[in-house]
Image (cartoon, rainbow, N blue to C red):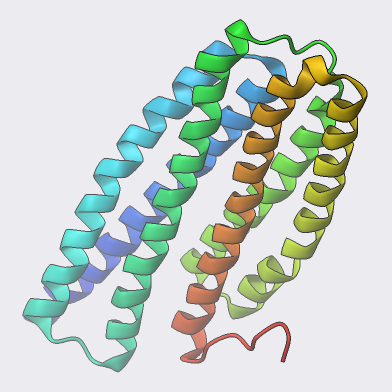
Length: 223
């Protein structure tokens, strides 16, 4: 019975992390939609989801610490619990990025001249899609304990970085050509950086999943 209860605790923690990841993915999707289509309802939805994610993170953190303190887990389970705390922290930060993007839509867009920068929306949507796919697959890798999928997620970060650089270069050129766009360009730059950070955090999640699955850290990209 004691062992069964312990296994149930581990299962509950994993389910909470997966639920947190699902809500955060939805928050990012809504944030990107709100930004690229000026959709106030999507912005509100993203911000509401972020609040739910914050509560879940606190719950996961407390449950992991309690399990470590009371169950004295063996090496494999301890690795899972510590990594789950780290993964939940990364997911919580991703939800923060979604919230910040949504706040731009709610607070900045109504006062901003955006007509000349709306042409960047398809590229931003594409960047969001790449980052979201990384996040979704990193969460899936955690669910299935898939080291190979985790490795693939990290490899995709380069494509996000490249598109991010191209977008920022094009935005800067637009600002130079038309100084009246500077306010809009600044806000677009901020949102793009948040999306790029979603990809970075997804890479971090993938690295922790790899550690859970193999007991080893991923090799440094430069190695």
